Image 1 (cartoon, helix red, strand yellow):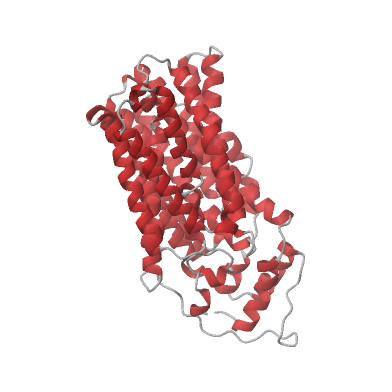
Image 2: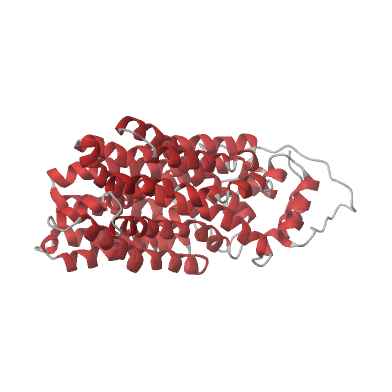
Length: 461
């Protein structure tokens, strides 16, 4: 049940127009620490498998599976948690995904062989997928209109620090003389620490006001949560009396315009993650192909340097400009420059023989991945679907992304041996072009709109 349009607008008005305050940042911190961990856990495995190959005597197929299985498991996690959010509520499931991640990370660190590590990396992936779906939706439903992109983007930008932490931890352990047999276990165990720090906060978070009103029809709780978030009690126009609820027609993902939006959000996330995770998880192998005689520590430091110089600034520039120039512009522009950078590496003679030129072009692709679709594919699905299907729409979109990530991480090690580095970069250019088309054709621009306007919520109230 839902209340009449006038009262709904009055309830949400303080939430939509409030300046950013401590409650917003508490929500961002609670979600963001999960994303720091997600990135660390997903990308550290590339370094771990490079160390484990001689220890566990990994074949190429086993190495590819360990690099990619968490990403495939994340598909299931995103779908399951996305659906549960719409059925049970955001609060009911928030925090469970991070507990799975903590348990999986710690158990992975004590794995005695390939099979056990493989199993616990599945558990890590389910937690990561659940985190992608829940954190975006919850942050969006608490955010204000003017800064929604900035708030949700800040959650995702914590991925950049997770990306940086992986090479840093690996370099400290290996450079510090820790044995490889112990170093890989410590690398995996570290991923549990930041996630564990926010388990309590996630389990105690309030149900979002959008869910309590649009799905549960609970006026009093909605008003109290709006007051808790903004410090303002909504003004009611019904002389203090609770109005009668009227029937709500729930949206369906296969209805117009949501099916097209879903194709756009899930499809663009799919192709983006093929490129991003294919390159990032396999970065030790890519750099090894570039410099066959470099040490593992050398390549770890180079990868960390690329993340620091190119990727991290890209995240934060996107956060700063998303509410000013719009999500769509950032997304298709990022895809375009990615395609050009990958194509340059593939076709310009001698690039793969010139480490400095390769790193420059590869770094440019990273900058525009972060100041581009890696950021916006996370933000957009949480904004363009109504409350009743927001969890599932976001979950399917995130699942599409992680399916692409699985394919990229699984295939790149083999492709490096068959079509070599230039062939891999040519493939990445092609999928980036598909991302441009999907962005332009299928995704609306939410910049400057209330969440109800950007999601077409009014049509189903």
